[in-house]
Image (tube, rainbow, N blue to C red; front, side, top):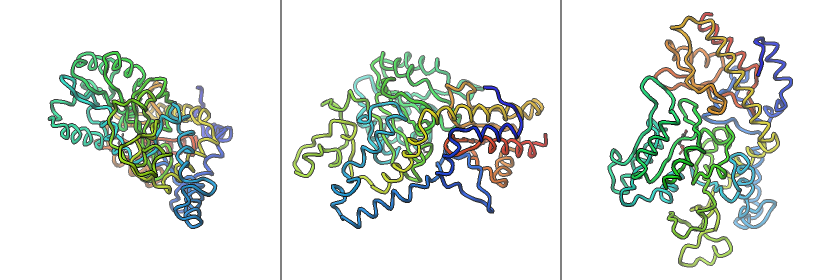
Length: 426
Ligand SMILES: Cc1ncc(COP(=O)(O)O)c(C=O)c1O
């Protein structure tokens, strides 16, 4: 992509943006009368304007029908789930019946471990990433202890080589090969929360399957951000949250992908509840668990309709914009951000250059860019904040920013660059 480095050009890109109307469908927080430049879609996506109406519709149905709302009204609550899985299946690349929207991400990771981590004989180990998101680390630690193992003996952590920030694919593949006799599971972050690196999930899955090992991914930072083909890549399971790039609100319901080959596998273990019971027989209240024959068979409890509602609202915005269009803009917007960063760096002496940890190759990254500052990182982060540019800070010296295609503009990136330029005195 060829960009010109002027403000007029940024304005032109905004004018020509086929998704420019989408921003108005979100509520952008304001500070001192000005809209924030919100680059925190990797943390909590903004509120879609239609979320309130969707919540109101649940309240209305509740007031109109009471418990009968599960079976009556415009959208009976019993079938509400189907309205989420259809648009989600386009975003994550699978069949609607391979998705179950339920619980929260870490809870779902535990539930997937119940089904897919079945240590036996010598095969008791798990390949994961060093410094995985803390919740995943605690999940691994406690889950493994629950099986009676010492995490130090069971968890094999792949890490970047000395002096490097990113995982090398060959190191992951070689760890799978080296430990294949002992591995029961490979469970990695598909897009690393710190570096923004996307893993080659298809190749990793193929290598693990060749050695008879199950494979899952935490897609918290990938779902709604990058193209995924979970079904075709043959991944066994994946979990994600919906409050980042899926804009479903704080504490929104998470979701799981479970490959269809497991749906009716009588050997698969799970922790069950009545919401995963076959719908036509659920209210017979009989003994003996009969799961729904899709990923919905992993549901446990009555879902929160209010959380379904915000997710439905957010997915409608994606459907109207078109997932392919969103991905196109994601590429262009991020490429533009890189141009601005390169431009800044070109003016800085070697020792003050900003180190971009995130891979440059567009196949290996999404919206997020992680910047390592050799000095004054914290002060720079605060300066951006004072100027209404919202990014996030990760110790020891990293600013993460994620311009997202649905509501960010090229001119916001331009403004951020001007602000950094001022701060860095270049
Ligand atoms: C990669 C990753 N895994 C797990 C979590 C935890 O998610 P939850 O609090 O929804 O369980 C997060 C939260 O941001 C995350 O980024």
